[in-house]
Length: 129
Image (cartoon, rainbow, N blue to C red):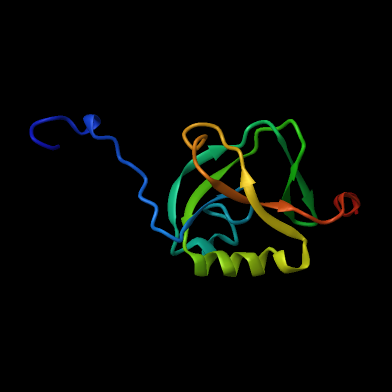
């Protein structure tokens, strides 16, 4: 409470440190899932959904986000340090092209923010194997 006003008059604002990135995660990186430890030093920003422009699919035992679909995919948004992004890029095989990190379009409250996610970059035929 500030100067006698209720806290609702002062909504909490996201504080993003220069050099950090907002990252949307939708699979094994989410809280409570097996690879969330990569985000241990990241700040959870909230639950989110993409606009209905994606498809969530699975290869082997992990989910993949594809562009050009009609589904609003649920996930979480984290404020991620550059070093953490490098580790996740390695984990997601970005250098091989398996995944690419790109801007995604989210619904409110993240609709007006630059948020990235890992988009599946391999050939769609791999999804059916």
